[in-house]
Image (cartoon, rainbow, N blue to C red; front, side):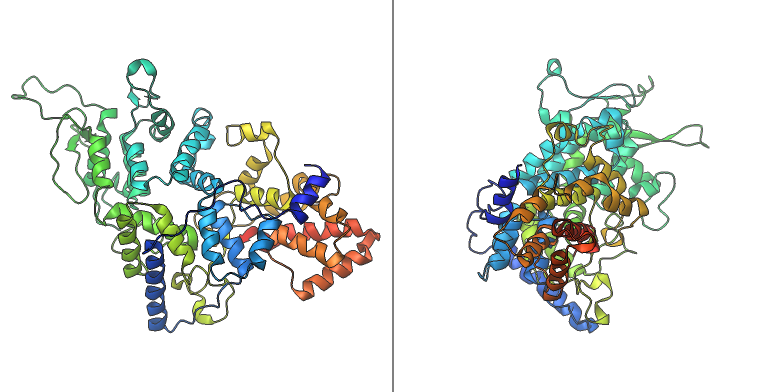
Length: 547
Protein backbone atom coordinates (compact mmCIF):
# COMPACT_ATOMS: atom_id res chain seq x y z
CA UNK A 1 0.00 0.00 0.00
CA UNK A 2 1.58 3.30 -1.09
CA UNK A 3 1.24 6.49 0.93
CA UNK A 4 -1.52 7.93 -1.23
CA UNK A 5 -3.64 4.80 -0.86
CA UNK A 6 -2.93 4.64 2.84
CA UNK A 7 -3.89 8.28 3.26
CA UNK A 8 -7.20 7.66 1.49
CA UNK A 9 -7.95 4.51 3.50
CA UNK A 10 -7.05 5.92 6.89
CA UNK A 11 -8.20 9.50 6.76
CA UNK A 12 -10.51 10.09 3.80
CA UNK A 13 -12.32 6.88 2.90
CA UNK A 14 -15.81 6.22 4.13
CA UNK A 15 -16.29 3.20 6.38
CA UNK A 16 -16.70 0.00 4.42
CA UNK A 17 -18.58 -2.08 7.01
CA UNK A 18 -15.80 -4.62 7.49
CA UNK A 19 -14.85 -5.29 3.91
CA UNK A 20 -17.09 -6.48 1.14
CA UNK A 21 -19.28 -8.69 3.30
CA UNK A 22 -22.99 -8.25 2.71
CA UNK A 23 -25.09 -6.27 5.15
CA UNK A 24 -27.02 -8.46 7.57
CA UNK A 25 -30.63 -9.17 6.83
CA UNK A 26 -33.21 -7.20 8.85
CA UNK A 27 -34.10 -8.63 12.22
CA UNK A 28 -37.26 -10.73 12.29
CA UNK A 29 -40.09 -10.35 14.74
CA UNK A 30 -39.93 -12.26 18.00
CA UNK A 31 -36.15 -12.42 17.76
CA UNK A 32 -35.05 -15.17 20.19
CA UNK A 33 -31.78 -13.33 20.85
CA UNK A 34 -33.66 -10.29 22.13
CA UNK A 35 -35.71 -12.44 24.48
CA UNK A 36 -32.60 -14.23 25.72
CA UNK A 37 -30.76 -10.94 26.28
CA UNK A 38 -33.68 -9.80 28.46
CA UNK A 39 -33.53 -13.07 30.40
CA UNK A 40 -29.78 -12.61 30.98
CA UNK A 41 -30.37 -9.10 32.30
CA UNK A 42 -33.18 -10.26 34.56
CA UNK A 43 -31.24 -13.17 36.06
CA UNK A 44 -28.15 -11.08 36.79
CA UNK A 45 -30.15 -8.15 38.15
CA UNK A 46 -31.88 -10.49 40.59
CA UNK A 47 -28.53 -11.93 41.66
CA UNK A 48 -27.02 -8.46 42.16
CA UNK A 49 -30.00 -7.47 44.31
CA UNK A 50 -29.65 -10.58 46.49
CA UNK A 51 -25.93 -9.99 47.06
CA UNK A 52 -26.12 -6.21 47.37
CA UNK A 53 -23.92 -5.82 44.30
CA UNK A 54 -23.71 -2.43 42.59
CA UNK A 55 -23.16 -3.00 38.86
CA UNK A 56 -20.63 -0.89 37.00
CA UNK A 57 -21.64 1.90 34.65
CA UNK A 58 -22.33 1.10 30.99
CA UNK A 59 -19.29 1.00 28.73
CA UNK A 60 -18.98 3.98 26.43
CA UNK A 61 -19.19 3.46 22.68
CA UNK A 62 -15.43 3.20 22.21
CA UNK A 63 -14.98 0.54 24.88
CA UNK A 64 -17.91 -1.45 23.50
CA UNK A 65 -16.68 -1.13 19.91
CA UNK A 66 -13.23 -2.52 20.67
CA UNK A 67 -14.58 -5.26 22.94
CA UNK A 68 -17.22 -6.62 20.61
CA UNK A 69 -14.95 -6.38 17.57
CA UNK A 70 -12.27 -8.43 19.31
CA UNK A 71 -14.74 -10.98 20.67
CA UNK A 72 -16.57 -11.52 17.38
CA UNK A 73 -13.79 -11.10 14.82
CA UNK A 74 -10.48 -11.25 16.69
CA UNK A 75 -9.48 -7.86 15.30
CA UNK A 76 -9.95 -4.19 16.03
CA UNK A 77 -11.77 -1.97 13.49
CA UNK A 78 -9.90 0.33 11.17
CA UNK A 79 -10.01 4.10 11.58
CA UNK A 80 -12.92 4.89 9.22
CA UNK A 81 -15.13 2.21 10.79
CA UNK A 82 -14.24 3.30 14.31
CA UNK A 83 -14.87 6.96 13.55
CA UNK A 84 -18.18 6.20 11.83
CA UNK A 85 -19.46 4.17 14.76
CA UNK A 86 -18.42 6.71 17.37
CA UNK A 87 -20.00 9.58 15.42
CA UNK A 88 -23.22 7.67 14.70
CA UNK A 89 -26.14 8.99 16.76
CA UNK A 90 -28.54 6.13 15.97
CA UNK A 91 -29.93 4.54 19.16
CA UNK A 92 -29.67 1.01 17.75
CA UNK A 93 -26.14 1.28 16.43
CA UNK A 94 -24.73 -1.32 18.85
CA UNK A 95 -27.25 -3.94 17.72
CA UNK A 96 -26.50 -3.12 14.08
CA UNK A 97 -22.76 -3.44 14.73
CA UNK A 98 -23.21 -6.88 16.31
CA UNK A 99 -25.18 -8.06 13.29
CA UNK A 100 -22.62 -6.64 10.85
CA UNK A 101 -19.70 -8.31 12.63
CA UNK A 102 -21.49 -11.68 12.75
CA UNK A 103 -22.16 -11.48 9.01
CA UNK A 104 -18.51 -10.79 8.18
CA UNK A 105 -16.01 -13.31 6.88
CA UNK A 106 -13.65 -12.24 9.68
CA UNK A 107 -16.10 -13.63 12.21
CA UNK A 108 -16.14 -17.03 10.50
CA UNK A 109 -12.35 -17.14 10.24
CA UNK A 110 -11.92 -16.08 13.87
CA UNK A 111 -14.25 -18.69 15.32
CA UNK A 112 -12.77 -21.36 13.06
CA UNK A 113 -9.33 -20.59 14.51
CA UNK A 114 -10.71 -20.54 18.07
CA UNK A 115 -12.48 -23.87 17.59
CA UNK A 116 -9.45 -25.51 16.05
CA UNK A 117 -7.25 -24.30 18.90
CA UNK A 118 -9.76 -25.56 21.47
CA UNK A 119 -10.16 -28.96 19.82
CA UNK A 120 -6.47 -29.52 19.03
CA UNK A 121 -4.33 -27.17 21.13
CA UNK A 122 -1.06 -29.00 20.48
CA UNK A 123 -1.57 -30.34 16.96
CA UNK A 124 0.40 -27.48 15.38
CA UNK A 125 3.56 -28.84 17.06
CA UNK A 126 3.26 -32.13 15.16
CA UNK A 127 4.99 -32.01 11.77
CA UNK A 128 2.52 -34.23 9.91
CA UNK A 129 -0.65 -33.06 11.63
CA UNK A 130 0.35 -29.41 11.33
CA UNK A 131 -0.13 -29.51 7.59
CA UNK A 132 -3.73 -30.71 8.08
CA UNK A 133 -4.74 -27.80 10.31
CA UNK A 134 -5.23 -25.15 7.58
CA UNK A 135 -7.63 -27.54 5.81
CA UNK A 136 -9.51 -28.11 9.05
CA UNK A 137 -9.77 -24.38 9.73
CA UNK A 138 -11.08 -23.79 6.20
CA UNK A 139 -13.73 -26.45 6.75
CA UNK A 140 -14.73 -24.92 10.09
CA UNK A 141 -14.77 -21.41 8.60
CA UNK A 142 -17.20 -22.62 5.96
CA UNK A 143 -19.45 -24.03 8.67
CA UNK A 144 -19.43 -20.74 10.60
CA UNK A 145 -19.86 -18.68 7.44
CA UNK A 146 -23.00 -20.63 6.54
CA UNK A 147 -24.19 -20.59 10.17
CA UNK A 148 -24.45 -24.38 10.31
CA UNK A 149 -25.84 -25.95 13.50
CA UNK A 150 -23.06 -26.69 15.97
CA UNK A 151 -24.47 -30.09 16.93
CA UNK A 152 -24.25 -31.13 13.29
CA UNK A 153 -20.61 -30.03 13.16
CA UNK A 154 -19.77 -32.19 16.19
CA UNK A 155 -21.64 -35.20 14.76
CA UNK A 156 -19.59 -34.92 11.57
CA UNK A 157 -16.42 -34.86 13.65
CA UNK A 158 -17.35 -37.93 15.71
CA UNK A 159 -18.50 -39.95 12.70
CA UNK A 160 -15.82 -39.00 10.17
CA UNK A 161 -15.03 -41.80 7.73
CA UNK A 162 -11.45 -42.71 8.57
CA UNK A 163 -9.72 -45.98 7.80
CA UNK A 164 -8.42 -48.05 10.67
CA UNK A 165 -5.15 -49.85 10.31
CA UNK A 166 -2.96 -51.08 13.13
CA UNK A 167 -3.22 -49.39 16.52
CA UNK A 168 -2.10 -45.81 16.20
CA UNK A 169 -2.43 -45.82 12.42
CA UNK A 170 -5.33 -43.66 11.30
CA UNK A 171 -5.45 -43.04 7.59
CA UNK A 172 -7.18 -40.31 5.64
CA UNK A 173 -9.91 -41.66 3.30
CA UNK A 174 -8.84 -42.29 -0.28
CA UNK A 175 -10.95 -42.40 -3.41
CA UNK A 176 -10.53 -46.07 -4.21
CA UNK A 177 -11.99 -47.12 -0.85
CA UNK A 178 -15.47 -45.77 -1.36
CA UNK A 179 -17.05 -42.32 -1.42
CA UNK A 180 -14.47 -39.65 -0.66
CA UNK A 181 -15.50 -36.64 1.39
CA UNK A 182 -13.20 -33.71 1.88
CA UNK A 183 -14.85 -33.23 5.28
CA UNK A 184 -13.50 -36.57 6.46
CA UNK A 185 -9.97 -35.74 5.33
CA UNK A 186 -10.01 -32.59 7.46
CA UNK A 187 -11.74 -34.19 10.44
CA UNK A 188 -9.39 -37.17 10.54
CA UNK A 189 -7.05 -34.88 12.53
CA UNK A 190 -9.19 -35.65 15.60
CA UNK A 191 -8.33 -39.33 15.39
CA UNK A 192 -4.72 -38.85 14.37
CA UNK A 193 -4.06 -36.47 17.29
CA UNK A 194 -5.24 -39.27 19.58
CA UNK A 195 -2.87 -41.76 17.87
CA UNK A 196 -5.86 -44.00 17.24
CA UNK A 197 -6.19 -44.69 20.97
CA UNK A 198 -9.82 -45.06 22.16
CA UNK A 199 -8.96 -43.78 25.63
CA UNK A 200 -7.57 -40.52 24.23
CA UNK A 201 -10.57 -40.04 21.98
CA UNK A 202 -12.90 -40.69 24.92
CA UNK A 203 -11.03 -38.14 27.04
CA UNK A 204 -11.19 -35.48 24.31
CA UNK A 205 -14.85 -36.15 23.53
CA UNK A 206 -16.06 -35.89 27.11
CA UNK A 207 -13.91 -32.87 27.94
CA UNK A 208 -14.75 -30.83 24.82
CA UNK A 209 -18.38 -31.77 24.28
CA UNK A 210 -19.69 -32.75 27.72
CA UNK A 211 -17.59 -30.45 29.91
CA UNK A 212 -16.29 -33.38 31.95
CA UNK A 213 -12.66 -34.36 32.56
CA UNK A 214 -13.47 -38.03 32.49
CA UNK A 215 -9.82 -38.96 31.91
CA UNK A 216 -9.29 -38.41 35.64
CA UNK A 217 -11.05 -41.76 36.04
CA UNK A 218 -8.92 -43.61 33.49
CA UNK A 219 -6.77 -45.41 36.05
CA UNK A 220 -9.02 -45.23 39.12
CA UNK A 221 -12.37 -43.83 40.18
CA UNK A 222 -12.57 -40.02 39.92
CA UNK A 223 -11.34 -38.54 43.23
CA UNK A 224 -13.82 -35.62 43.23
CA UNK A 225 -16.63 -36.46 40.79
CA UNK A 226 -18.96 -39.49 40.83
CA UNK A 227 -17.39 -41.02 37.72
CA UNK A 228 -15.76 -44.43 37.87
CA UNK A 229 -12.94 -46.05 36.00
CA UNK A 230 -15.41 -48.43 34.41
CA UNK A 231 -17.49 -45.52 33.10
CA UNK A 232 -14.43 -44.02 31.47
CA UNK A 233 -13.68 -47.23 29.60
CA UNK A 234 -17.33 -47.67 28.69
CA UNK A 235 -17.11 -44.36 26.82
CA UNK A 236 -13.78 -45.44 25.29
CA UNK A 237 -15.52 -48.59 24.05
CA UNK A 238 -17.51 -46.46 21.58
CA UNK A 239 -14.18 -46.08 19.80
CA UNK A 240 -13.42 -49.79 20.16
CA UNK A 241 -13.21 -50.27 16.39
CA UNK A 242 -9.69 -48.86 16.63
CA UNK A 243 -8.60 -51.82 18.78
CA UNK A 244 -10.81 -54.82 17.93
CA UNK A 245 -10.88 -57.62 20.47
CA UNK A 246 -9.21 -60.92 19.75
CA UNK A 247 -11.38 -63.56 18.03
CA UNK A 248 -14.04 -65.05 20.27
CA UNK A 249 -13.14 -68.33 21.96
CA UNK A 250 -14.21 -71.44 19.95
CA UNK A 251 -16.27 -72.46 22.95
CA UNK A 252 -18.60 -69.51 22.43
CA UNK A 253 -22.07 -70.80 21.54
CA UNK A 254 -24.66 -68.81 19.57
CA UNK A 255 -24.60 -65.86 17.19
CA UNK A 256 -22.38 -62.87 17.91
CA UNK A 257 -24.20 -59.77 19.15
CA UNK A 258 -24.25 -56.81 16.74
CA UNK A 259 -21.09 -54.71 16.78
CA UNK A 260 -19.38 -57.28 19.05
CA UNK A 261 -15.90 -56.48 17.72
CA UNK A 262 -16.45 -52.71 17.76
CA UNK A 263 -18.30 -51.74 20.94
CA UNK A 264 -16.16 -53.47 23.56
CA UNK A 265 -12.77 -52.75 25.03
CA UNK A 266 -10.43 -54.20 27.64
CA UNK A 267 -9.56 -52.19 30.75
CA UNK A 268 -5.74 -52.35 31.07
CA UNK A 269 -4.54 -53.83 34.35
CA UNK A 270 -1.08 -54.38 35.76
CA UNK A 271 -2.27 -56.64 38.55
CA UNK A 272 -4.86 -58.89 36.93
CA UNK A 273 -3.88 -61.72 34.61
CA UNK A 274 -7.13 -61.37 32.67
CA UNK A 275 -8.22 -57.87 31.73
CA UNK A 276 -11.84 -56.93 32.23
CA UNK A 277 -13.85 -56.31 29.06
CA UNK A 278 -16.59 -53.67 29.12
CA UNK A 279 -19.27 -52.78 26.63
CA UNK A 280 -19.96 -49.22 25.48
CA UNK A 281 -22.45 -47.45 27.71
CA UNK A 282 -23.68 -43.87 28.06
CA UNK A 283 -22.90 -41.87 31.19
CA UNK A 284 -26.61 -41.57 32.00
CA UNK A 285 -26.98 -45.33 31.41
CA UNK A 286 -29.71 -44.81 28.79
CA UNK A 287 -30.48 -48.11 27.04
CA UNK A 288 -28.77 -48.89 23.73
CA UNK A 289 -30.12 -51.13 21.00
CA UNK A 290 -27.15 -52.28 18.95
CA UNK A 291 -27.56 -52.91 15.23
CA UNK A 292 -25.17 -53.26 12.35
CA UNK A 293 -26.80 -50.23 10.70
CA UNK A 294 -24.97 -47.78 12.98
CA UNK A 295 -21.41 -47.91 14.22
CA UNK A 296 -20.72 -47.30 17.92
CA UNK A 297 -19.36 -43.84 17.07
CA UNK A 298 -22.61 -42.98 15.31
CA UNK A 299 -24.57 -44.19 18.33
CA UNK A 300 -22.41 -42.05 20.63
CA UNK A 301 -22.75 -38.98 18.42
CA UNK A 302 -26.54 -39.36 18.27
CA UNK A 303 -26.77 -39.59 22.07
CA UNK A 304 -24.26 -36.83 22.75
CA UNK A 305 -25.97 -34.29 20.45
CA UNK A 306 -29.47 -35.67 20.91
CA UNK A 307 -32.56 -33.64 21.82
CA UNK A 308 -32.88 -32.23 25.29
CA UNK A 309 -31.02 -29.89 27.59
CA UNK A 310 -28.40 -32.28 28.89
CA UNK A 311 -24.60 -32.41 29.06
CA UNK A 312 -23.84 -31.29 25.51
CA UNK A 313 -26.15 -28.28 25.31
CA UNK A 314 -25.11 -27.02 28.76
CA UNK A 315 -21.46 -27.38 27.86
CA UNK A 316 -21.83 -25.43 24.61
CA UNK A 317 -23.80 -22.66 26.34
CA UNK A 318 -21.26 -22.45 29.17
CA UNK A 319 -18.27 -22.29 26.83
CA UNK A 320 -19.92 -19.57 24.78
CA UNK A 321 -20.48 -17.51 27.93
CA UNK A 322 -16.84 -18.07 28.90
CA UNK A 323 -15.67 -16.78 25.52
CA UNK A 324 -17.35 -13.42 26.05
CA UNK A 325 -16.76 -12.98 29.79
CA UNK A 326 -13.41 -14.71 30.26
CA UNK A 327 -14.78 -17.38 32.61
CA UNK A 328 -17.75 -19.71 32.51
CA UNK A 329 -20.84 -19.95 34.65
CA UNK A 330 -19.27 -23.33 35.40
CA UNK A 331 -15.57 -22.66 35.77
CA UNK A 332 -13.31 -24.30 34.77
CA UNK A 333 -15.51 -25.13 31.80
CA UNK A 334 -14.41 -28.78 31.70
CA UNK A 335 -15.12 -29.54 35.35
CA UNK A 336 -18.89 -29.91 35.45
CA UNK A 337 -19.95 -31.92 38.48
CA UNK A 338 -21.90 -31.51 41.72
CA UNK A 339 -19.01 -30.08 43.75
CA UNK A 340 -18.40 -27.38 41.12
CA UNK A 341 -21.90 -25.98 40.52
CA UNK A 342 -22.66 -23.08 38.18
CA UNK A 343 -22.47 -19.60 39.70
CA UNK A 344 -25.87 -18.79 38.16
CA UNK A 345 -27.75 -22.07 37.54
CA UNK A 346 -30.97 -20.42 36.34
CA UNK A 347 -29.04 -18.30 33.86
CA UNK A 348 -27.23 -21.36 32.51
CA UNK A 349 -30.61 -23.08 32.14
CA UNK A 350 -31.92 -20.10 30.14
CA UNK A 351 -28.89 -20.16 27.82
CA UNK A 352 -29.19 -23.92 27.37
CA UNK A 353 -32.91 -23.81 26.56
CA UNK A 354 -32.39 -21.01 24.04
CA UNK A 355 -29.58 -22.92 22.35
CA UNK A 356 -31.68 -26.07 22.01
CA UNK A 357 -34.70 -24.08 20.81
CA UNK A 358 -32.56 -22.41 18.14
CA UNK A 359 -31.38 -25.83 16.94
CA UNK A 360 -27.82 -25.02 17.99
CA UNK A 361 -27.55 -21.74 16.12
CA UNK A 362 -24.55 -20.25 17.92
CA UNK A 363 -25.30 -16.79 16.59
CA UNK A 364 -28.43 -16.63 18.73
CA UNK A 365 -26.29 -16.97 21.87
CA UNK A 366 -23.66 -14.59 20.54
CA UNK A 367 -26.14 -11.86 19.72
CA UNK A 368 -28.00 -12.27 22.99
CA UNK A 369 -24.87 -12.11 25.12
CA UNK A 370 -23.45 -9.15 23.18
CA UNK A 371 -26.75 -7.25 23.50
CA UNK A 372 -27.07 -7.92 27.23
CA UNK A 373 -26.53 -5.26 29.89
CA UNK A 374 -23.81 -7.30 31.61
CA UNK A 375 -21.71 -7.56 28.46
CA UNK A 376 -22.03 -3.83 27.87
CA UNK A 377 -20.83 -2.78 31.33
CA UNK A 378 -17.50 -1.03 31.66
CA UNK A 379 -14.48 -2.90 32.99
CA UNK A 380 -13.65 -0.03 35.35
CA UNK A 381 -14.09 -0.93 39.04
CA UNK A 382 -16.33 1.64 40.74
CA UNK A 383 -17.58 -0.26 43.80
CA UNK A 384 -15.99 -2.95 46.03
CA UNK A 385 -18.96 -5.24 45.36
CA UNK A 386 -17.80 -5.59 41.76
CA UNK A 387 -14.54 -7.28 42.74
CA UNK A 388 -15.81 -10.85 42.42
CA UNK A 389 -15.51 -11.70 38.70
CA UNK A 390 -18.18 -14.40 39.03
CA UNK A 391 -20.78 -11.72 39.78
CA UNK A 392 -20.35 -10.32 36.24
CA UNK A 393 -21.12 -6.87 37.67
CA UNK A 394 -18.41 -5.38 35.47
CA UNK A 395 -16.60 -6.69 32.42
CA UNK A 396 -13.55 -8.80 33.17
CA UNK A 397 -10.28 -7.83 31.51
CA UNK A 398 -9.24 -10.46 28.97
CA UNK A 399 -5.71 -10.78 27.65
CA UNK A 400 -5.20 -11.04 23.91
CA UNK A 401 -3.61 -14.13 22.38
CA UNK A 402 -0.44 -13.81 20.33
CA UNK A 403 -2.29 -14.18 17.06
CA UNK A 404 -4.76 -11.46 18.05
CA UNK A 405 -1.97 -9.11 19.15
CA UNK A 406 -0.37 -9.52 15.73
CA UNK A 407 -3.65 -9.06 13.86
CA UNK A 408 -4.44 -5.91 15.85
CA UNK A 409 -0.96 -4.50 15.20
CA UNK A 410 -1.38 -5.23 11.49
CA UNK A 411 -4.77 -3.49 11.38
CA UNK A 412 -3.61 -0.51 13.42
CA UNK A 413 -0.47 0.07 11.31
CA UNK A 414 -1.82 -0.87 7.89
CA UNK A 415 0.50 -3.84 7.47
CA UNK A 416 -0.30 -6.34 4.72
CA UNK A 417 1.50 -9.72 4.92
CA UNK A 418 3.24 -10.97 1.82
CA UNK A 419 1.90 -14.06 -0.06
CA UNK A 420 4.55 -16.41 1.39
CA UNK A 421 3.63 -15.40 4.93
CA UNK A 422 -0.05 -16.05 4.27
CA UNK A 423 0.66 -19.39 2.59
CA UNK A 424 2.82 -20.73 5.43
CA UNK A 425 0.83 -19.34 8.35
CA UNK A 426 0.07 -22.02 10.93
CA UNK A 427 2.14 -24.71 9.27
CA UNK A 428 4.95 -26.58 11.04
CA UNK A 429 8.22 -24.71 11.36
CA UNK A 430 6.59 -21.50 10.17
CA UNK A 431 8.95 -18.69 11.07
CA UNK A 432 6.59 -15.91 10.08
CA UNK A 433 5.96 -12.90 12.28
CA UNK A 434 2.49 -14.07 13.32
CA UNK A 435 3.81 -17.45 14.47
CA UNK A 436 6.52 -15.68 16.45
CA UNK A 437 3.89 -13.60 18.23
CA UNK A 438 1.90 -16.75 18.98
CA UNK A 439 4.95 -18.37 20.57
CA UNK A 440 5.66 -15.28 22.69
CA UNK A 441 2.03 -14.91 23.79
CA UNK A 442 0.88 -18.50 24.41
CA UNK A 443 -2.72 -19.32 25.25
CA UNK A 444 -3.34 -19.45 29.00
CA UNK A 445 -5.87 -21.45 30.95
CA UNK A 446 -7.94 -18.41 31.89
CA UNK A 447 -8.17 -15.30 29.76
CA UNK A 448 -8.80 -13.28 32.92
CA UNK A 449 -5.40 -14.38 34.27
CA UNK A 450 -3.16 -13.67 31.29
CA UNK A 451 0.52 -13.92 32.21
CA UNK A 452 3.01 -11.35 30.98
CA UNK A 453 6.73 -11.82 30.43
CA UNK A 454 9.91 -9.94 29.70
CA UNK A 455 10.11 -11.60 26.28
CA UNK A 456 6.68 -10.21 25.39
CA UNK A 457 7.67 -6.72 26.47
CA UNK A 458 10.95 -6.88 24.55
CA UNK A 459 9.19 -8.09 21.41
CA UNK A 460 6.82 -5.14 21.47
CA UNK A 461 9.29 -2.49 22.63
CA UNK A 462 12.39 -3.53 20.68
CA UNK A 463 11.11 -6.01 18.10
CA UNK A 464 11.65 -5.41 14.40
CA UNK A 465 7.97 -5.65 13.48
CA UNK A 466 6.79 -2.84 15.77
CA UNK A 467 9.88 -0.77 15.01
CA UNK A 468 9.18 -0.95 11.28
CA UNK A 469 5.48 -0.24 11.64
CA UNK A 470 6.20 2.88 13.72
CA UNK A 471 8.73 4.28 11.27
CA UNK A 472 7.95 6.76 8.51
CA UNK A 473 9.59 4.51 5.91
CA UNK A 474 7.58 1.32 6.54
CA UNK A 475 4.59 2.35 8.63
CA UNK A 476 1.77 2.98 6.14
CA UNK A 477 -0.77 4.38 8.59
CA UNK A 478 1.79 6.52 10.41
CA UNK A 479 3.17 7.91 7.16
CA UNK A 480 -0.31 8.65 5.85
CA UNK A 481 -1.27 10.53 9.00
CA UNK A 482 2.00 12.42 9.04
CA UNK A 483 1.58 13.49 5.40
CA UNK A 484 -2.04 14.64 5.85
CA UNK A 485 -1.44 18.39 5.57
CA UNK A 486 -5.15 19.09 6.06
CA UNK A 487 -4.97 17.66 9.61
CA UNK A 488 -3.64 19.72 12.48
CA UNK A 489 -1.60 18.09 15.22
CA UNK A 490 -4.60 17.34 17.43
CA UNK A 491 -6.41 15.67 14.54
CA UNK A 492 -3.37 13.54 13.79
CA UNK A 493 -3.17 12.46 17.44
CA UNK A 494 -6.87 11.59 17.34
CA UNK A 495 -6.37 9.43 14.23
CA UNK A 496 -3.53 7.48 15.84
CA UNK A 497 -5.67 6.90 18.95
CA UNK A 498 -8.49 5.57 16.76
CA UNK A 499 -6.05 3.32 14.90
CA UNK A 500 -4.49 1.82 18.03
CA UNK A 501 -7.14 2.01 20.75
CA UNK A 502 -10.41 2.54 18.83
CA UNK A 503 -11.15 5.67 20.82
CA UNK A 504 -10.51 9.36 20.73
CA UNK A 505 -8.05 10.82 23.21
CA UNK A 506 -9.25 12.60 26.30
CA UNK A 507 -8.71 16.38 26.32
CA UNK A 508 -5.72 15.93 28.64
CA UNK A 509 -4.17 13.23 26.42
CA UNK A 510 -4.74 15.32 23.31
CA UNK A 511 -3.09 18.37 24.85
CA UNK A 512 -0.06 16.50 26.22
CA UNK A 513 0.65 14.49 23.05
CA UNK A 514 0.02 17.42 20.71
CA UNK A 515 2.37 19.58 22.75
CA UNK A 516 5.04 16.87 22.58
CA UNK A 517 4.72 16.60 18.79
CA UNK A 518 4.68 20.36 18.23
CA UNK A 519 7.89 20.64 20.29
CA UNK A 520 9.43 17.91 18.16
CA UNK A 521 10.27 15.67 21.09
CA UNK A 522 13.90 15.23 22.14
CA UNK A 523 15.19 15.56 18.55
CA UNK A 524 13.17 18.63 17.53
CA UNK A 525 11.62 16.53 14.74
CA UNK A 526 7.81 16.60 14.75
CA UNK A 527 7.54 13.52 12.52
CA UNK A 528 9.72 11.45 14.82
CA UNK A 529 7.74 12.76 17.77
CA UNK A 530 4.52 11.62 16.07
CA UNK A 531 6.09 8.19 15.59
CA UNK A 532 6.96 8.15 19.31
CA UNK A 533 3.30 8.74 20.15
CA UNK A 534 2.20 5.84 17.96
CA UNK A 535 4.85 3.58 19.50
CA UNK A 536 3.62 4.47 23.00
CA UNK A 537 0.01 3.66 22.11
CA UNK A 538 0.90 0.29 20.58
CA UNK A 539 2.97 -0.62 23.64
CA UNK A 540 0.33 0.40 26.14
CA UNK A 541 -1.41 -2.04 28.44
CA UNK A 542 -4.70 -0.82 27.01
CA UNK A 543 -3.70 -2.19 23.60
CA UNK A 544 -2.88 -5.67 24.94
CA UNK A 545 -6.17 -6.30 26.71
CA UNK A 546 -9.80 -6.61 25.75
CA UNK A 547 -11.64 -4.29 28.16
